[in-house]
Amino acid sequence: MVVEQVSDTDIDRIFQALADATRRDIVRRVLQSEQSVSALASGYAMSFAAVQKHVAVLERAALVAKARRGREQLVHGNPDGLRRAQLILDRFEELWRHRAAGIASILAED
Image (cartoon, rainbow, N blue to C red; front, side, top):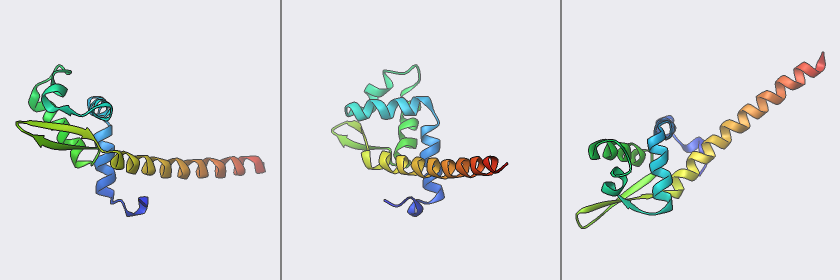
């Protein structure tokens, strides 16, 4: 996916989702193995509803996906969403490396 095709809204959702330590931990956990929202909630000192809200933020950012299996909602990591986040971060890194090289070049002239 080309980063220029990612909207500012999508980029904001990804960064917002990854800005929270609990959400980053949820992503890590569901990448290791699919888990129910109940199982995820048992690992945090917060309510089930709070964990559900964290999962919803991650889902809107396309970093995780939910699937209903019977009465459970199973959460799994979305590798494509994480690759998109990595591409965005790579582009920012490229931009800042280019800027730093420009500054170094200017300073070397003196």
